[in-house]
Length: 160
Image 1 (cartoon, rainbow, N blue to C red):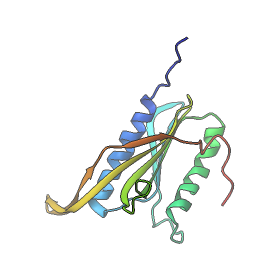
Image 2 (cartoon, one colour; image 1 turned 90 degrees about the vertical axis):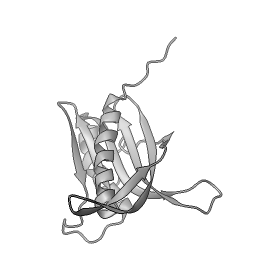
Image 3 (cartoon, helix red, strand yellow; image 1 turned 30 degrees about the vertical axis):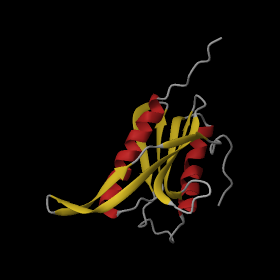
């Protein structure tokens, strides 16, 4: 019996959307806040939200930003209104036993068809170049690392 593979097109669309945004943020500011993208059942266009520091909130940690986004999206996910969700956050990662830590964008993706993974997109930033008179960083992404993950939306996250 052949196992049916999940349709990863929604996941790829969300990854492409968020990584384009992340690269632009890294070029301009050298960092990214936590963000989310999602696809609803009745709209083929991805929706996107990044946590902005100008939201009148005290400075939130990345974990708090991610939790806030997860809480916002858990209701529509539980009501079966969303086909796929992606949470993005800046992280430092390193190989086990190595003291070296490198920056990466962590993408936590979940699709209604059962796909759930964390994807690390390691990057390096090199000092700016000028484009149309504006200084921008050069961002180089290296090979992604993906692994299965536990769902963040199968059960409602606890309130903050």
